[in-house]
Image (tube, rainbow over all chains, first blue to last red):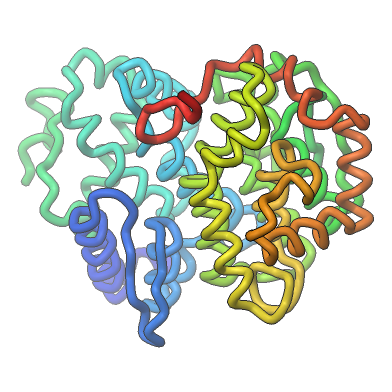
Length: 174
Length: 216
């Protein structure tokens, strides 16, 4: 069985996600963290990758060289693209590309949850929460992926649940 | 594994240099700037790397990371931090500076002044080290990504202000690597920054994160 299904993994994931989210909310621009050795670390993707390694759940950084590079690419996409949107047009273009990318996928990288899903979920939350039902339908693959990730209680933290379609089980289960 | 690049694209420098150093067997294919190769991206994205498993890398730093790791190297926290700094802070400011110089005809010295703070940070970090590399005591993907990012604007180390002596030394050192020289000859064709003009003209004018143009 996947280590990602066991309770210990989910508990660790919850504590790492909590730290990432609080760093992201505390530092409005670029997060900074003092690590155990007293070194200052700068940048959301860098700090998040460090926390994952410290918590010994490296599998969410990918296992092969290909997976690792793809995970890091999506972390960079989060900080250099999603975080830089300045208008609705930028958001629309990003959602359009992500919707295309996620067409045949459950997660961003391979068939498992990775740090890429977590950071993109946190980054897109305000955007997705602001979409109309119709827009959520337009970006149906992004919505499906988002809904799936927010069903991990250890990742969702205290973020409000985004409702997708009225009268579906997942929209009222929290 | 195929690497797709286009002529006159400033991002080609770092990926081709990283390929030369860490992944010599990669097949390079030259495309037109407008050609779409990454199936899920609505806009053309070059450089791009198609992996053997069919996946695509469409961000230059991810491509460089991949080449570096595939040669058996690990990514430490400090390398991650340099690559993130390059993509979040340096690259947006640098693209704006390069655009101002090459497309809008601003003087190179003036555009360098606009990215002064970032270069000063780089110089400061290098000055604190006893080796001319950004991470530990050997060449890493951090050096190639940052060098490849500033190269299109700086081109020659003498363009850098004299007070940035550590940066100058580092820049000259990386530029002299045989693998980097090959890329520069191939891409710049002795024309300096102006080789990027045709490519940049077709791009929207870049803005730095604050939204202000780099030179007013």
